[in-house]
Length: 514
View 1 (cartoon, rainbow, N blue to C red):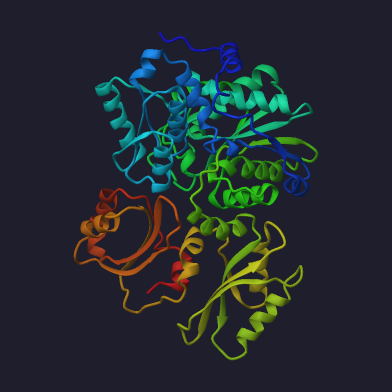
View 2 (cartoon, rainbow, N blue to C red; view 1 turned 135 degrees about the vertical axis):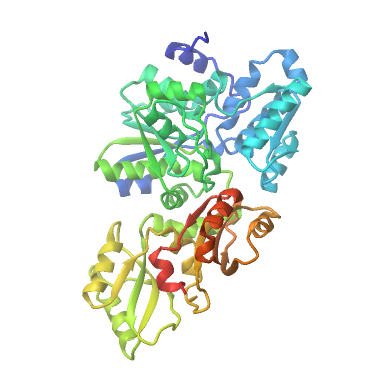
């Protein structure tokens, strides 16, 4: 029977971890603007400033530094599409070892080039991390290499735990909680092990994306849960199954978990930029998003919280999406569908209503309209707000003034697609089904979709907008006769792409439906 390491064992491993041959002791900085806004002291642990712009090299190097000379001479291997790959490559270069990095073929060229620049031998295989991992296991056996796991390894966990050691050394005053992003669980297992050994009164709060919450679901189920699918916005934490050891350690030591969404993380990326003039990746901002949510829910004041900014490997092209969603994430913008009479003077009365909204004048951030009916006009409008929770009140105010209004501020279909394509009513689109897909951003993805379709299913609507990510968000309308509904369901299941059926969404009915 496998013997589990006890908290005292992990404390010793963290204290003796070999990370500073490659890693630096990152700064612990106050976020002054955010602290003023939240009325609590917020500290940022700047792991985004590591040589590979991520904490991952700590665990990778500590693991490899404990290998035998014979193992190092044979070489190491890992499967990763991001930060762990760079950590392994840099560590291998420093230790004089060969490093084979298996990456999915969908990996952005930026990350492939970064690994190659550090001396890693890149092998592109499969469409997903799971495919890459399986191939890495085959190469490990065939070539006698040593696999360096991204999170589920005691030496990796101990390497990441040195972050907590630094936090407690750098901050001598009271510390109420440390917020830690979770993917596979290596970071929070190491941080919790150290903090609970020395300062058990400090809360350790785990943070997960609401569409990649394998640890949270596993804790609730009291066993490891494998997610059928994960969201890809925060690719650094997109893990379907947490580690066996990380789950055990986190289950014993972590005080609580918070789930955050894409908009909240985009707003947090902006918050970090305002305070540091640095841009972190989505995973790097999750802890800040969680602190804001925690303060809002618990109404705390005067406490001290630390957020680990765990990485900054952000594709530049994704900033367009982040900037667009940050205002909605902070709820500084309300999105509304307002119905007004299609008659002279109604538009002027609508604008006067905007000017008379409680709280003073608001800027119009977006306005979309196209004539489609002789009796009514549906307007898609964005308005600045003065704080959270205002969008619903604004919608109610329009209704009281005689304009039927629908609050779209939290509607994914509205935010991702409809705001860019308002005015698509068509009398020709009978039997239309509307689906929102996530396609892998690679050649052939659309062709696969089209080849699986029945010839009789006509595409009536298509919207795609490149977000600079590893995946694309697609909106598709298809004419599917009633008799083909079961065949259509089978088509969606065979396709294998994540999707949401939006046919009954009221936003679709207002602006696009046939």
